[in-house]
Length: 300
Image 1 (cartoon, rainbow, N blue to C red):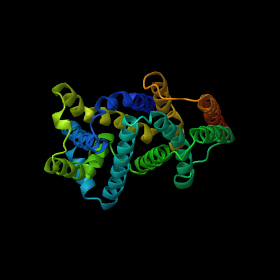
Image 2: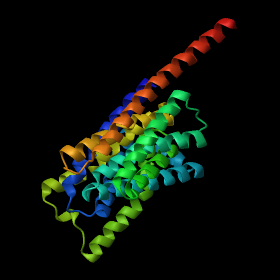
Image 3: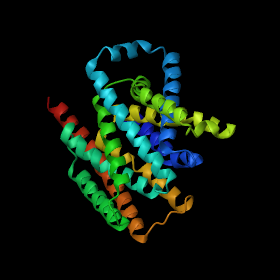
Image 4: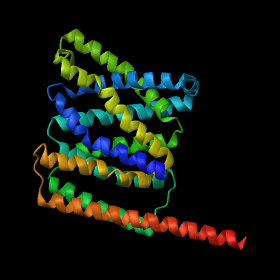
């Protein structure tokens, strides 16, 4: 659990600061950035798996239809999430991306209850209620249907569920996921070259080098996330995720100068209140479980 928590915190801090990286490529269309992200993630993970000598695991995945279908689903979900996120950041919607990842933990809890049969305790349900009210306030204040936020929350929530349901080594799993969407990315490269609309390859050499690093930038937080997902409950993992959108929200205000209303700040305060309540309830639940186990062992 502690190891999973550390991995989750690292992953969400990395994701929180990612808008700073994608803003470097404001002049490159989101679809083209995504194609580079997929290709260079595949290359980086291929090198990593080769160094780890885990190609045998890849062969076993290829021989299992259920594993292939699960990894295909997670690969497509994360690609959709990447595309929406890149487009939103480069079109001035960092606040809405933050809202999306505030929504995601609530969806994680719902998915955990429905599909994984996890049972939050009363304190955790109280925290979920407070966070839900906060997100509702934020959404109403936003003034329109937040399709970017909803899409980000849904795609990443389902991706987290797929990772939870598929037991795979983190690096092998991520290589398999990028391999699923690699043909689409390469096909898009060919299309852009054919119609003469390729932008990335005309960037200055320094910016092109930064774009080539998108594989590393993409893969590292996902590796930490995969390790966290294997060691933590999905609902707890979702609440740790508030680290990421909080960083994004701060960037949107102090770096990107997006407008943030007082109502949004109230919602932000409520969400952190929910975090404190959820953490306290989780600690209390763990202590009670240990005490009950100790009492039961002594009786036997």
